[in-house]
Length: 330
Image (cartoon, rainbow, N blue to C red):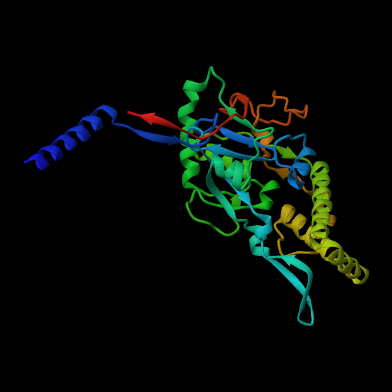
């Protein structure tokens, strides 16, 4: 009986303590100051940022918050993961011949969702320095938020490749939840389509041939230098030898990317683009083109093409990241 009594007392104490101290620690993940449907803007040093700077742009990547600051959905391409085709001397692999045309034209991972910790600290698709959040003005917040939430829902459904050619022709994304070869977009074009699928047709920038030509030559030189850097000293020497007898690997791959950029000729390593680039205009939005035309970006330019009637976004706030933390819930 004494044993049973002791067990009863212990159980009574356990249940009493549970009633008094019921609750648990809950982890709140890392977040940013964005609400569902806001556009997240990022800088990212590299040849894309250098290219867009020609257009007066400051930001080089964008995505959309698909909840209240915990996850971003965006469209990107890992160029380093595009399979490379090589030249061979006998059975020895030497210099790159070209990038795999299918993967260059249809970039992966394409549209994906990443939590804030992953995208800022692991994959580093977004960068905190210089980051910003594009959102409605305080006066329009209550009216516009429902439409931006719908845009985020549309983007959560859509799948698509990253398309280099979308920098020239942005009208390439379909409302489907599977990949279609030859269809997709780039980052800001995907944000544009999220709003479009939700019923809002935002303005699209027109880039004249003179600026497209500058971008094409900038892209060519950047890629050419990147290939030589990746090849290293001996690889660059082999590339120079190739150049004595034809076109070096650096020029071929640079040609291939510019041909893809302008005409979606992802298989073409010739200098095709040089003959036609001065006739090529672009209809596409870079991240800065999602801004109001009255907004002056940190570079001192006004590249935005939106008006208060073409866009729900009227305010740009500096990015604020809040680290994850635990809190007690009763």
